[in-house]
Image (cartoon, rainbow, N blue to C red; front, side, top):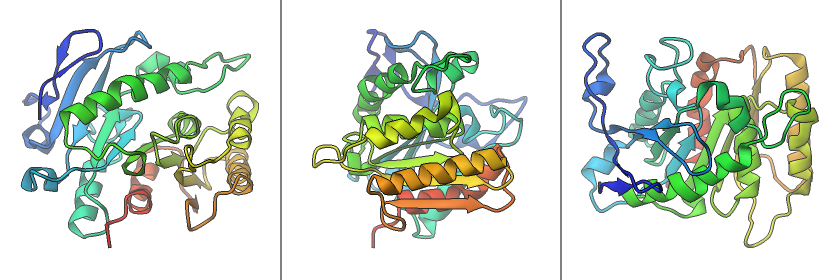
Length: 288
C-alpha cells in the first residue's frame, strides 16, 4: 500500500487502528482492518472516517487485484464499539471472510464510509423535501466518485472498472445507493439497496428510476433489493412498487435484479447483518 495525498493537499494514509485497552477487539490486531481518519472533501464540509477491510487473499496473493464494495454508514458495519446501537453491527468482516473461505464469494475489499451524524439525512438524500430539507446527495456522490474512489484505487490493488465496483447501504443509505448508482452506472455496476427509504420526498426515487435510460455507455447495474415484512406495511408496499418500476425499466428478476421480502425482519442492524451474506453472494459471487 502506498501513502496517498488528499485532494486538499494534506497527506493521509490508511493505517491500523490503535489498540483500545479499555474495550479490546480482535479487529485491533487484524492487519487487514485499516482506517483513513478524518477524510475531508471539497464537496462537503464534515470530516468522516473511512474503513477499509481487505480480504485474506490480498495478503497472500501480492500480484492480484480485487473488486471494491463501498458501503454507507461505515461505523455500523464492522465494529460493535462504533455502531449506532452498541454491540450491534453488520458483522461484515466475519461474513465476508466466511463466504470467501467457503468459495461462495469473490474476495472483495470492503470500504465503509462513516456517516456524519446530524448531516446524515442531508447527505443521503438525492432530492430536497419541502418539509424535511436534505438534498445534498449529489455532493456526496461527487465525494465518492471524484475523491474517495480515486484514493482507494491509488492506495490498494483494485479492479477499478464498473463491473468490479459496488455500492450499498440501508434505509437512507439504500435510497442514496440507488440514486447515485443510476446517476453513475459507468462507475458502480453492483448495488445493494437494503430497506430503502422510498418514502423520501413523495417517493421521488421512483421518478429517478423512470427517467433512467440504459445504453452501452450507461448499462444497468446489478441490483440487490430487500425489505423486511416487520418494517411497516407502507414501506413494504413502497418497495414492491420500486421493484415493479425497476422491472418496467428493463431489469430482470434472477438476472440483474434480486428482490427479497424478509419475513419478520425489522429495520435495524441485526436484520441487515442476518441477510448480508445473501447480498454479498448475489453481488460478488465467486468465480466459477
